[in-house]
Amino acid sequence: MAYIQYLVFEKDKLPLPDSYDISLSSIEADSSGETEAGTTQRDVIRTGIVNISVSFSVTKIWLKKLTAYSKLAKIPVRYFDTGDLELKETEMYIDGFKAKLEKDTSYKGLWTVSFTLKEL
Image (cartoon, rainbow, N blue to C red; front, side, top):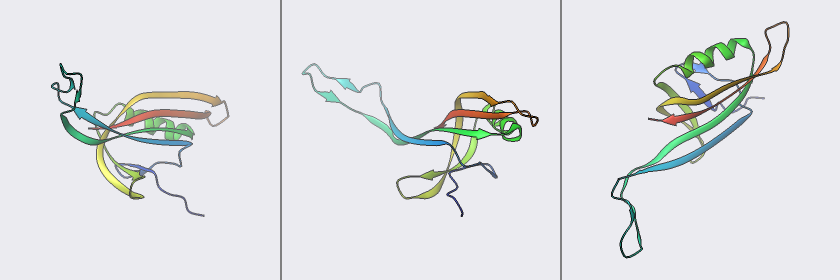
């Protein structure tokens, strides 16, 4: 049975994630905030900025690849958009990269890798 391809870095199709949490945020200008009258004023510069928190259970091969990607300033990413249920393309970077050894094996272990992808 085929599964949905959630993430593609450059041409690497990433394995099925253990968790995939997508959120959208906005960037507001410095002029945003509360006025003297007590009302909120929002000067939105950009909306719909994608942040994806994801975790994987991987072997040493994917651990090495994901660690290398975490060191790049930007990555061309295709991600599964929950709004229209299709892959969308953008540039992102990895923040908060964590790798945890779950089980030591003769193949150099089973690892849990988690990070957040942030849209540029």
